[in-house]
Image 1 (cartoon, one colour):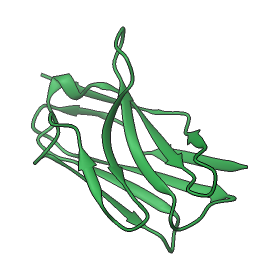
Image 2 (tube, helix red, strand yellow):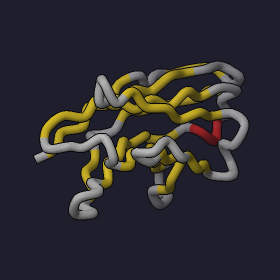
Image 3 (cartoon, helix red, strand yellow):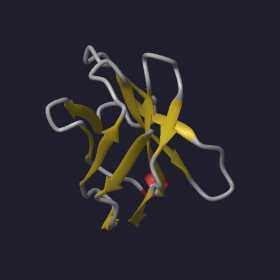
Length: 117
């Protein structure tokens, strides 16, 4: 079993910054890919950023240059540094872990990010 616990969501003004954290525990491996997704009201969940066990990253076009994903394998934690936030970044942000050994996906409970204009 895998547990993911997110933190760091908040209300922030446009142009501000936030850092989200996701701590993983359970039957996990350093090679597991981890990522952040978000879901705004009445919209589908979308990928924000993803980082592989080897450290390769990819981002949604809408956040490139503003968001940075990183991981600390010693702490089993992935981070999302969000700068120059915009109102359209408002959403519930979910942490995801894709376990390399079997391809199974695990999700956190979500953390709310609200950006006011």
